[in-house]
Length: 289
Image 1 (cartoon, rainbow, N blue to C red):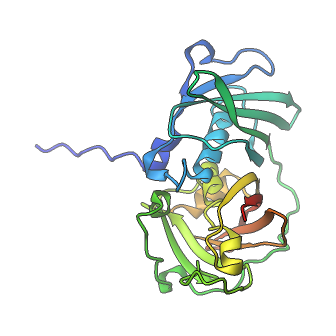
Image 2: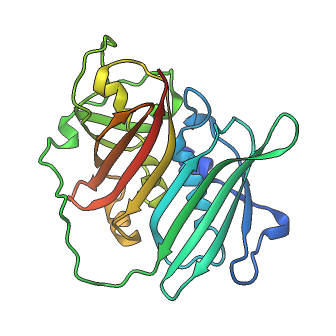
Image 3: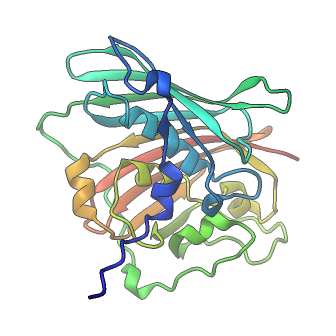
């Protein structure tokens, strides 16, 4: 009799794999840190270093794997202090204050330099909380758009590997086809999900929040060098709402408000196909002239 073959692990879950450091595999006591070893995954490589959305998800993963975790993610801010290199790293997550229903976190990611000295590459803060059933409302309804099944998928370029890990279906404001300096509005709308499909959770939602191409490329069709300096994700859904989304598409909408003297902002919203606003996100991005 032929035995069924075990299913291969999703590349995203491979990328999120963190190994507890032996000395701190179990964090003891109030506000004790937990440390984990990890490394970038080749499937999520960017032009330089790894895709920032997956790195942000790795920072959140350290919080979610901490034995003192309270509740679910409400907010995550990641500061990209330096470019993460394609080498092993260590993440430390520390609950700096735990209240009755909220918990506040600091997270750092370090890598060893060529001189063998550890350097901080990323810092982050997070808030988790035990949510209560309350009156709720959404003042940012999902735009009326074409269903994902009726929108062709954007072609994949081998130049940036991480893009191939997402099924992206542009609706408006696609990446420029001609890099001729033509100015346009900064708005982009698209359907997107993991490829291969994967049930949505807080970690994949974090990465999807960073899946938009830089707004400055849309704004004036020039291949301007950029780098995210700080990224914040606000979570407007709990685990049950994310589970209900399953492997479905999310509608993403991104825009900028200002481009000024080397930095621009980016704000975005992510809804599921049922129209539930799952997350909003904000970035400040460096650009080089």
